Length: 503
Image 1 (tube, one colour):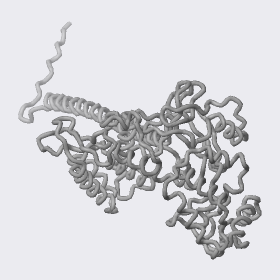
Image 2 (tube, rainbow, N blue to C red):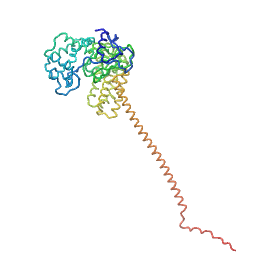
Image 3 (tube, rainbow, N blue to C red):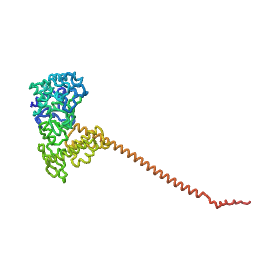
Image 4 (cartoon, rainbow, N blue to C red):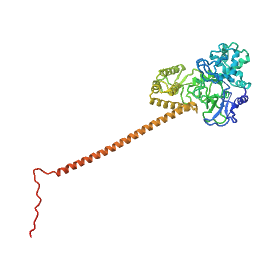
């Protein structure tokens, strides 16, 4: 491995177009693994640490992928007539067919003689990212050799298989060595789609090598996260939390919501190292209990977590009654829970899955377990597309509850900013605003109803008073009428006689 100083020099050349005169990073000795990216000043949460551009990039072209995408601009093409007419075996759009990049690619692959140049071949299209290393400058190829490469028994397989697709594939040992080394570096430090890499950063659907990011080491609780610019595919790395000067910048190579055992196996098999971060050293995973299962003793309410042993099949310990269980025993519980929840997820009824997660799953698997978290993430993704068979109220309550659950889990793990957190917090804010608006509307309805009821009560009182007054008036009128009515059998008394005074 070339020394950090030489790596820094080559990275400065690679990153020169960004013209960053005061970089916030440097290549230094790492406490995690060999060398790493270290902050040269205190970085605030959300601050850009560095930008990186792809040294190599191409279509991932897995067997299950659609192959009608341009090998230069990477945009999707029509389903027919998208292959280069010059016979290089690459898909290309009409605009990029005239560009310098495609001419270089085309000349190289044509010289190797594709067996079926008019048929899209995933092996050839996938190899292009590797083959482009042959056209790099000396400094750029030196930069590839600066990066970590796990040279296992399989890193030569891709080039060996690709050779069968050409009539005149090169046999020069130096060329083969460059391509094999590039494959190894891509497998160790590169991107090859991100669907199985992480749920903390932006998805990336290509095969690419970002040299500076390739030096960033892994931590299961990363202090940085990345996004990509759509037009340039340049990477932007930001601080997920405040990073003090002299601290190493870290990212995550794994999905956040998988348990210790699954992460250890992934890192060992794919990246050839064992993580010893603070999360991996804690059986409870910072109290998040992502691996946690219920104790097998029906009289115990404790959680069982795997031992930190580094073994792929460790024993499990109950935190309450201290009972030990074998890995096989606990996996039966895990598999049962996964099967039950997946059956509901595949039932084509989102409402059924939500009700099952809310009402029944907690009886046999803790709500913190990664199986439940993955199911909740899946529900939220489906709700983004539409309510399906959920009522509006159920969809609203589910978004509110699940986004809060996931955000609280991230807080327990000590995770900082990320695209996932931003998305969850935005969803939570939106749903809380919707709930607040609905509550306000309901309160306004209740207020208006109360006003109407008050007015009705007041009207009732006025009516009662009016009726009472009318009754009293009627009674008075009745009495007055009784007094003023004469008895028909009695004559009225004559007036008194006038007195005449005589003279």
